[in-house]
Each structure stands twice: as structure tokens, then as C-alpha cells.
Length: 392
Image 1 (cartoon, rainbow, N blue to C red):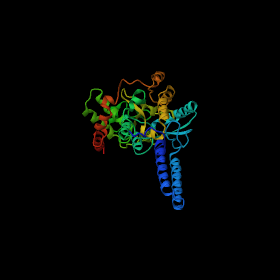
Image 2: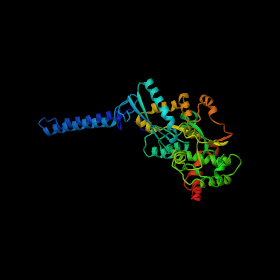
Image 3: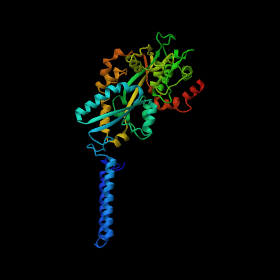
Image 4: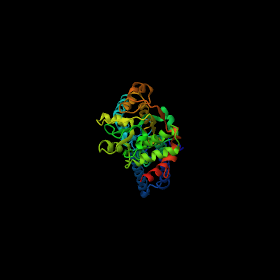
């Protein structure tokens, strides 16, 4: 670790570095002055000193201008250039936006009340896998709330999040939960009731692409686990999953895009989606029948602070406070209001009648954990690619 890493900075440089450079510069100027300007008739040396002094002053001003102000917390003030107006960037997956539209103003108001500092939380929403890639490629998120832990782990491997992020928040870093559901057309004319029904001939299934969407991976695992968690083997699971994806001629990039095609454009007989997505759709007037299969996967959505970025922005304290706020009953009630199953036990008890019980609920860990899941199903050339090739 660099000895300058945790010291206050102006631009790229710590205060200690600037002081040392300045002292060295003064020493050099003094030597030059003593050697060359001792003779007062040497007018060119005097001009050289003045020229060096002006250059040094200009560089100091330039460094300070690029670096912004120094914050009281020891980090550089972020893009606003004002410690009283701080920007925080949240990068999340598409279907969380409705919840954050309610939660973010509450956090901003609380922080202002407690710290007399204006914080603006800017949200970016999209397909979970694509969002993780964007962060790795330079989208400077302070906090990420993604669809699955695998996407957070990608950011860890890129060196932006420290390993062990799961231990830094309650519930092993899981801030929201849901389960998989099957939405159908009015009256359910194809009589679709469970995952196996999606493999029937003549069924047009709408689900996102597991290569880009975290939600799509949960959908895939729900179907696979429906078989393997009830006594079936991998061959039987492969047969069912292949038939379901053969019935899915279009694979949109995100869960939001798949929902829009189903609801707004009338595409498909059935939509595999999150339970929270259906509850939210009802609130916006798109009330369609859906079923919560009795054998289901717990869709666990993680939250993490992006360590490298918050240290760069000087926003760690605020980012950690924001994450902590998301676990409060106030924020958890807002997540529940738009259809997420809360992780807070008190709120879960309050809203339990809103969510149907699932007889057999399994997790990603039950299927081997995300590292094994990725290798087995979603890496290039793995099971999903083979299924997709057969479908085509």
C-alpha cells in the first residue's frame, strides 16, 4: 500500500507530497540564487529566478484547479467541487428504479438533516450484467445493487471492490429478495401453471437473455432447479430447459425489455419474470394473471460499496451510510411496496400476507454457488450456449 493512499489529496497529489515537492523546489531555487545571483550585475540570472517562480506559482494553481477543494473528511471533494454539495452514483439493475425513486429522496433528506450537507444520489439502471460491465469499463459507481452476486464478483475481480464485501452489510450483503413467477394472458388460455408447462408445444415464452440479464439467469435456474431439487437428474433438467428455450424465439437484453415486449407489445403467451415486477406492473394498471410456482428459487439481490471509487471520490462515509439506510424498516417498506420481499424480519412479518408462501424454496448456493453455476451454465460454450445453439 502506498504511504500516500490515505492522506488528503489535491488532484492526484497528497498534501504531504505537495509540501515535499515545494520544499525541494525552494532548495533548488536557493542554490541557483546563491550561485548565479550572488553577482547582482547578472541580470539574466535574476530573470531566470523570476521565470521559475512564475512557473511554480502557475503549476500550483493548475494542480489546485484540477483537484478541486479538500474535504473535511480527508478526501477530495467530488465532481461538484463543493463539500456542501456531494454527488453519489448508484448503479443498479432495471427493475429497482421504482423503489429507488421513493427511497433516494428519503435518504437525501435524512443526510441533510443529520449532517447539513446536500447529497444527490444519481441512479443508473439497466440489465445487471451490462451494468457490471459498465462499472468495470469506467462507470464510476459509488454503490452497486445488482441482480446477482456473480455480477458483483466480476467487479471484485476487476479490482474495484475488495473481497469479502458480503460481510460488510446485513443478510450477507443481500438487500432485496424475490421469487420467479409466470405471467400469462387474460384467462390463461394456454393453461400454464408451472415451469414444466412452459415446455409444451405451441407456447411462446418471453424471457431475457442470460448472457446480459441477471434476471434471465434466475429464470434459467428456476427451471433447472425445478427438476433437480425435486428428485430429477441433470439430463432430465437439460431436456426440460432446452424445450422451454426452444419456445422462446426472442431473448431481450434485460428483464425490463422483456416485460415491455410482453405487456406493451403483446408478445408471447407467458413471461418469466420476478414476482416484484408483476406486483409493480399491477400498480401501473397492467394487471394480468400470474402464478408463483410452488417449487421456486430465492432471487437474492446484493448491494456493495465500490471501494476504489469511493476512495477516489471521497464518498466512502456517505456511500456506507446509504447502504445502511437501505436495510432500515423505512427503506425496506418502500422495497416491499413495489413488490420486493423484504430482508428485514419486522417488515417481512408486516407484509407476509402480500406474498404467497413457496413450498420448496431453493437458493443459488443449493445449486453449487455462483462460481460453479457460471462455469456450468453461462460461460462461453457451457450449457446455455449449447441449448441456444440447439434452439437456433
